[in-house]
Length: 112
Image (cartoon, rainbow, N blue to C red; front, side, top):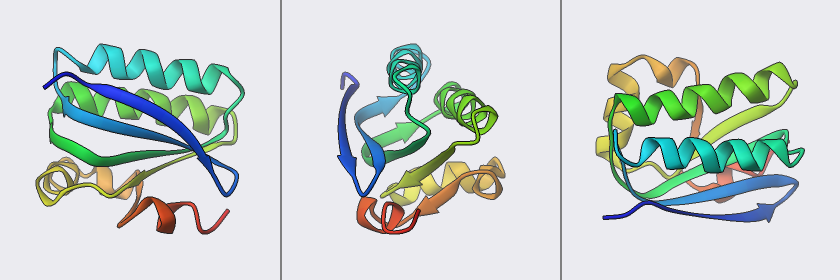
């Protein structure tokens, strides 16, 4: 499945909705898209992983890169709606201590 990203706004947060698998082949496109969004002046981003069926270490690297960029700008990156298998990868790698994860986009954007 090809990766697709759409962007919306919710409660002052920019939400990037991701659909597809995030792997060695699609991670560069994801990173490019997320960087485009941050270069547009976004400081508060939620990455909606509800449509992601699989993520590998390259995909996690793309998320970490954007996290570092936002943090250097006093911004914040949150993850939302990850499926159990994606949550498991995030937990195994210890990134659940880095990323604020929420059950839904609504939950992730409810607080500033």
